Length: 180
Image (cartoon, rainbow, N blue to C red; front, side):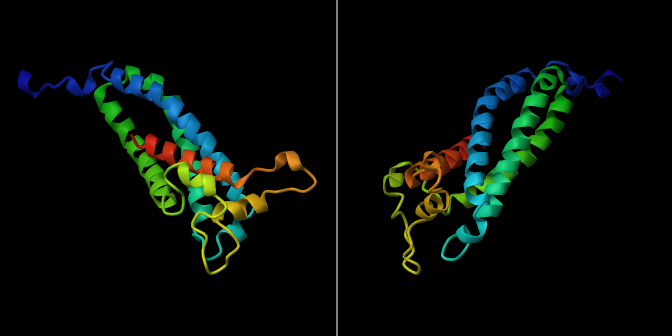
């Protein structure tokens, strides 16, 4: 009964295209991991302040989610790219299910962060006044992060609000890029 035999799911080497794409993905995921960790550090130290109304109450959670899952995604991709090349198509499909789970977490964090992060670096020129809530009048989200991350005794550690804004924009953009 030759017609019942199917070797397609067990052909070794069918993961070569996936392995090549994974190798290219190292660059995007590595940069995304670095940027997500950096923006998480901005928020983590002052979470109680930057989550207060009128700012987004989920900033710490979303920054944590992006940082955590970018690390998981990068190291998963790094660990699995060579085995993917030699894997039969059935294994590549199973690996793809794990990839889909990681991508869903990237998407959750990235889409929700897009509600309070500019989508281009243009608004970062005016990061101190970008979307200043009229309720508090204290400054934009990025101005407050600049103020909270200013250390009078260590001026070399000062990070201006436009740099913080650009870091968030870059992280958001690489989050979008990692979805593809």
